[in-house]
Length: 177
Image (cartoon, rainbow, N blue to C red; front, side, top):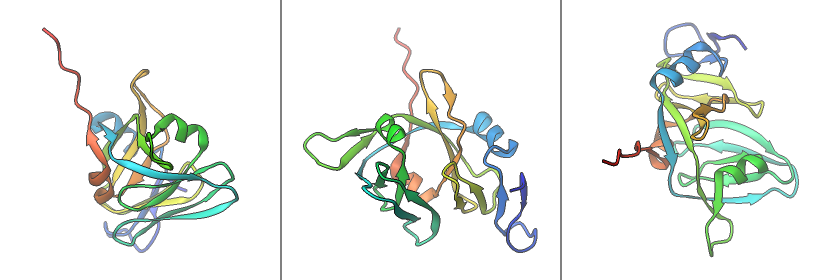
């Protein structure tokens, strides 16, 4: 994959481009313009007992990506209905079981996110080894560790409609006087 080369069609500004998720256009935008968000709402999740293909389909019908859940991986269904795979260590660090509701979890943690700085459809090779596609108005996100004030360094895409349904800005702590 090139840092930013046309994927489909010509270079007319509307065609999807492939870009390395670590390209300066993405990392600099996250550093310069990224804002902190937290996931809200609840997700449903189950652990895969066998290798299971999972295709992430957005609310508008767009096929965002596909992945293969290995035994033990969590298959998560988000509030907007999209399904995705999360490795056990990541899932347990980012979600807490909801008391009294089997298979229901609440998210914890934060992300840094920024609107797509390229202003056109894009495709990245996601950390799970499959292409992930986003529209010109998608969000680019990375997990943020508040303790170290560092991003994880594994940017991924979130469709704008799903982002608006599931994320809220993190408000800075008030100064006590």
